[in-house]
Length: 473
Image (cartoon, rainbow, N blue to C red):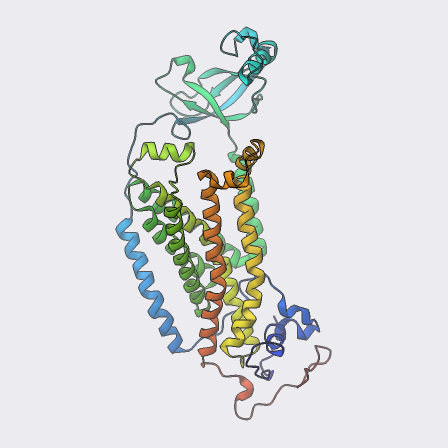
């Protein structure tokens, strides 16, 4: 971005409106290109050049808050750091089973009746879904697949899998699959196909994502990928094992989320006052989400045990507080969007101040909050749609059953998503004024870099032809 070090400051408008906003947000981007509409432009760019240094006093104030917080997070990591996850006897249910990689080597079409795929003689009663399925299987064509185990102690062993015509997943020759192993079953039934091996397409998609981030983001893109890897390590090495060991899920989530926040923000955006303000705004908003989540999860009597997966977790580890696990998920799920909001708002206020250093904190706040309103509208809508998309099959089932909106919302499975969405959205909405106010107070209180034009003997630089128009005074 082109700089004009000798440009005189704009007139001071105490209310922060009118020319104050134009002179702040538009002086850099809008007025030079004769595009006043840019004054309210909003984007997700989190860095517009190096942040201006702040005074020694402000650095001490910020450090006095963040250093004890960082020390507390480190202590929490040390105290709660888990050992190995407690062992348990595998149930063979859901994800809790032994699996191996395998390949479908041959597929033959056979009569379902010849292999007795229905498991018994059809009754002929088509009034039920089971009877209809049995009739179709008896007269249909099934697939007899030969599957070879590729990993584990039984590598090279083959078994037969019968695929019925009404199954959603059909097997094909040469296809890579995942098979479950049950040692206590009869030998011919120990292995069964449970899923498709989709590691290659997933890895390819991840590679395309990484390349796109690096090509567009360059060094910051690389730092973002490093921060993503660190976040994943904190999640898998600390948060999940600590919860399995029986630690309080809420405490573990708060400590883990705080560690992720500190590492990700400072790694991606640098060790500066601007980033520190974003950290403070995120911390305050996360605290609000934690308080509201704890209050309403308890008030609504949400147990957190609503499906097969949570039921399996509770069965294997009865000591885990499932409602606390639900609250931990709310906090961790809100962190990623909070980072985006707080960093964007902090950068916006910093840019407004650098464009017009004469603006007071009220003017900076009012100008910054106008940008934040656009962010609120887009982020809340994004969060609601993300949760609705994840629960779409469930919502479709309620629609098929023709249940009323009240009945659907009152069911625990949907109520969890509603509480999760609303609590997270309240925290996101609150983060905008909180972070904007913090950033405005910090930059307006800074006196380390007075405007160049205010110095003795400084002369305003001549206007550059064809680059904007002079404002009326």
